Every structure is written in structure tokens, then in C-alpha cells.
Image (tube, each protein chain N blue to C red):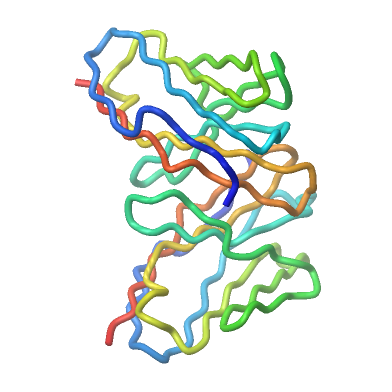
Length: 113
Length: 108
């Protein structure tokens, strides 16, 4: 399997606090993605990156920012966490080919109380 | 807005049964499609790509109908271990668009 790890695996935080989730890959893939998964909504794209310092917004980007200063790391920051951001967050990486699909990390379960 | 629609199920079938899932996609320009499998509280994992000519991988067959904009997954001889949620996916440009998934439960 592709080397992709997410940290932390679980986090409980209070409303209004900043939170940063980390995605680390060892595959040197160009593309990295952050998704959130919620019951009744499926997986929705938050932000993605197509290279170092190159990022773009997805479908549900409000309240989130990202950074990619190195190929291997893609950070997702909740500037001021809200209860609506309680979710499971998945990072994914993809190869260059159109038919490659994605490889996902194990996910981060975030609870905002 | 690009969308992928799936019947959420659940599909409850006995071992050995054949079961089929369909999904529809809205973006007529989409070129690549996939089926992912997701076990409870785990990450999605690529099951198979979907090609225009149809493709088979063991007990699994995927087909694409571009004219009707739907994708199907057929599972033959269902096993208990096939119990999972199956996600239909459209690669619309750079990002993947996921359906909400169809839940399969195989019982003995």
C-alpha cells in the first residue's frame, strides 16, 4: 500500500479553538486532497493541492485553510472550530494517471464540543 | 453541480447470491470512473476502475453505459467478507466526486 499517514487519529477540541490535521506521504505524489465524510453526505472535497504551495478549494472549503510547504506534507487547519466541523477527515493522494484513483489515509475523527 | 447518485440500500443477500449496484452521474464529459469499497469506520479503498468496454476482476464486474450515464457493479457468489459500503466515483477533472454509497450485507 501507498505510504500515507494522518495525524492525529482522534481529536476532541473545543468550539473556537484552532485545529491542524496533518497528512504525510512517502510516495512523492503530486496531488493531495482533504475530504470530510458525514452521514447522509458521503465524502466531500474540502481542499486539494497539485504541488508545493499550489492549492485550490473544493466543494466545502469555508472555515478551512490548507498549506503545502513540502511535497510530502499537506496540512488542514480549522481556524476556529465549530460543532458543524465534527466529522471524519480523510486525506488522499493520487498518481499522475487519469485512471489511477486515490489512496486514502486512515482518517482523523474530529469532535468539536 | 456535478453529482453521483446511488441507491443507499441496504442490500441484504445470502451467501452465494448475485447482487448488482447501479449509479448515475451527471457530468457527461467525465472520463474515468471507479468503485471503492469502505468498511465500517475505515478508509475507502479502490475496488476497481470502470472502463468503457467493461471489466472483470474475479467475482466483480463493472460496466459503464455512457449513453445513459450510469455505472454498474455486479458481485457474483457473494461472500460474508463482501459486506461493506460500495462507493461509486466519478473523476471529474482533478478531483473525485463520490456517491453516498450503497450498503451491502451478506448473511450466512
